[in-house]
Image (cartoon, rainbow, N blue to C red):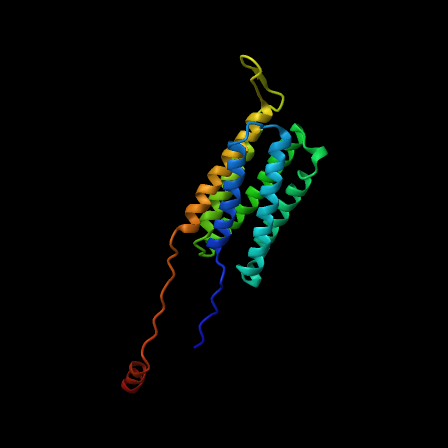
Length: 209
């Protein structure tokens, strides 16, 4: 019996690539003193487009022909959000909250539902999809709780605004995603080992019958 061909790239590679880009986004926001809408949307745009490329590559290199719908859909959602926020004149506070919240809701629901379906089908990777989808939906909820027009003047020129909080929330989300996907990518996979009975034993059993 011929063994099924093994793929060079696996789901773990997709998770590690996503973790890498999420970590880059988190680092850029964390170590930037400017948390304006322009900077936040620039980082989000790069993160979304890079993630879309990962999904599109995964659809071709990792998933079988019948299972490419989910990564393609997630890639399209991320690409659209990244392209819209990649236009500098549109990088306003309102645009940040509208696009990031919309992307988080759509992408979170897509990944959550895909993960639940995968779990019902017996796919161990479905649990990671459920978790990431839930965290992405939590990002949407967190941003919905932020008032974009909020402003609190501190001593001197320090001002805490809604966009500063919003960009910080996205940076925190990216850091959490990077950690969870990194752990998932480096976690060992338990693959079932199928052993075949020796040919001599099979012949002996046939003779006894």
